[in-house]
Image 1 (cartoon, rainbow, N blue to C red):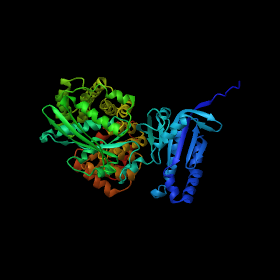
Image 2 (image 1 turned 180 degrees about the horizontal axis):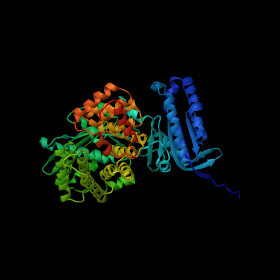
Image 3 (image 1 turned 45 degrees about the vertical axis):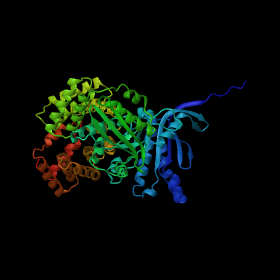
Image 4 (image 1 turned 120 degrees about the vertical axis):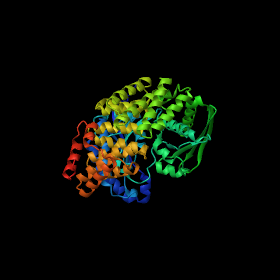
Length: 584
């Protein structure tokens, strides 16, 4: 009997790439498109593949399949290609630009002559389809190989169900000039995954004082949705910019860059709640579904879970095993505890010393009633830290010790509570334990892939470690999730300034001042920027403004507080002020 030859297999890094909108471009001008494609191949793509030791397996018109023996080589090649194409076509009009999508996966492949097949190839092709135009997407398998070995920063884009793959794919993404794109005034593009904004639910209780409760329900639904990696969810801060309005849902959809909008109302009376919710397609304005939920108040978590599951089902998003497990066991809650948690959250957001005292008292009351509520410890840790950072209420360094204890207690009570890890990352950063802060910030994002706090927390760590170029995509991601959040702009500006990207930094700081017109720190950095760029009149004008806003501003306090491993860039910025004639 003739022996059947065994399949030849090996582990490889596989890159799949194709041109965005190729059919449309060909329809406009076949000859011009082919000429541009050939030029890009000859000048950028093929040389980059050769330089990174890749092998072109095959081409399919606008598409390419490339094999690499190293995941690092494959990812660096993808980033090099996209960076070069972006730079070469920066001045071209949108319709004339030729962009690739690139996907990379590490997996088992079958060898058949010069061709390759198998899951490694199939998954790379699916990952490529999830990449942003001009960007690179990589699988979770690839991130394990390249983390710490490449300069480019990839941001977690969540898990995705894709055709002909029987398990969700967790995808990480990179794109060039992320900050410039984020700071443009254009309406943001829709994300690759299903996207939603939850508008503040109306208070229908007949008592204006119950408005906080309707807000709390809205915020909890946002929090629940945010933890689902297959969704893109706009943060509470930006959704609540529409509170008290009756906006056109299609306008909201365009402004926030989401496909779907959830709106509704809450009525609370005699120990019961009634929630009406409806989801609307932001492109058409059509209703996808509407539901009414009528329950006992102590079943509030179950109601929120029903709303979340209805949305997930409607958008055909599959929960990962971990996300399913995290939703189990959420039973009844004491109405008093729920009220205190919601009130404390609303109060802390006022960002005033007196509000901080009130929020702290409410959270301590929650812990006294029910010590098993992890979120209470986490939020109390953040309140305690905020008092120290803002020098409120006679705070001392003991606040940092107490905040760390509370963050530890939050995680000990429930390791899956993202706010506990965010609190830990903040305190570890400010106490200059940056490696520990990094671990907790990464864990927070893993638990809540739509958390602006998580991305800015990790961005802060990267910045303080001396890696501002890696912080920028994280701040950009936070700003995309929460386009009303001024601190994301401030942090982005600071990192851009550290890299001498002055124009972008100035845009970020000035935009931040439209949200927070009394910011002393953004004015400080703008003064440093003007000094570095020789704009003498603007330096002095900004310095006067700074002290009008905060007469007790101190550069020494800034330098002592910010936990840079190497504060060279900050010293350079301050030296620029000296040279500009600023008396410090």
